[in-house]
Image (cartoon, rainbow, N blue to C red; front, side):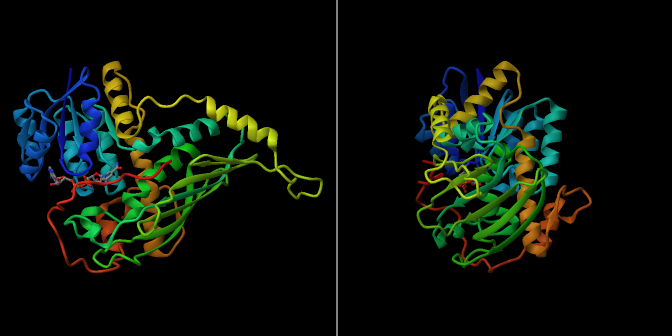
Length: 388
Ligand SMILES: NC(=O)c1ccc[n+]([C@@H]2O[C@H](COP(=O)([O-])OP(=O)(O)OC[C@H]3O[C@@H](n4cnc5c(N)ncnc54)[C@H](O)[C@@H]3O)[C@@H](O)[C@H]2O)c1
């Protein structure tokens, strides 16, 4: 039986808990930890975990609990790296919430800690485990549509102004950034995963137009260029009514979207499109897509299941530290390009000021001064995206 602990028992910890409780034969939650221990106690009661012990700091938990196999880090981003590294140094495997860390240096340190201690590290990218995204990836991999030429990434969310009243949100120091880091992290992970190409350059612009109690951006638009000349456009927003998220991949022979849509043009002798397009290819792609089996578990539960199986089978998890780092690299480049108003080239090396969180903080544009700060909201319900 795998013994699991959750560190940070706020909103997202519920999805981790529900995921873990889906596999009672494989895993048991033995400890809950939060700097507000009453939140951990509430969670213990809510899920009726009679045997789980509650801690108010990770050091005590790791010292007193002898054999935790898997620690879920569900805290704000600025403590992901130090908490994950502590857990790994105690030979615990780690699932860490997105974003993996606030800078590339922290990602490198986390990856090194996993390697040195022989443990598994899996940053959350639960949206790969969603049918429309999974099937889009499989269809592109089939080669039916040719190479991806242009990816349009719409990470479009809506959050009320009070969203940023929570103590750690809306600050560069604690949240690490706005929706480019904290929301588009999902879509940038999908983009990296689907493109399978190395990004070479990034340009971007960002602003804060609707969230006065926040230093960070609430809208950004960036472009990524890849080694094979493909381009990607990423819009990261918390100002979009309707949250119409999606990916649109323009490939050589057709375009495919999530939510699912397929179009394919074919040329006349003069280069203009034939009316009605390439019906044969459209039908072929639809048939391929429809035959892909649904995932048995979606979202966090899908990723948690993969990690539990990886531990039992002594293999790497599907999503690893290097994937989380690639996402943080693209996000860092988007921030660097916007702050410096320059085209940024990859890689961002150790010599680059933006490799370190201090360098990002030094250059960060503070759009507003954060004034109001609340310790906790009463309302615990959250939503995690619209992928249908
Ligand atoms: N994957 C997703 O779809 C998704 C959705 C929402 C949030 N998140 C991520 O989850 C993380 C937490 O977000 P949230 O919305 O649950 O926030 P939250 O504030 O509701 O929960 C975070 C909890 O961590 C606790 N905490 C803070 N520092 C701690 C420490 N040093 N040790 C122990 N506990 C500590 C807080 O007291 C709080 O209870 C963030 O990284 C966020 O980006 C992911």
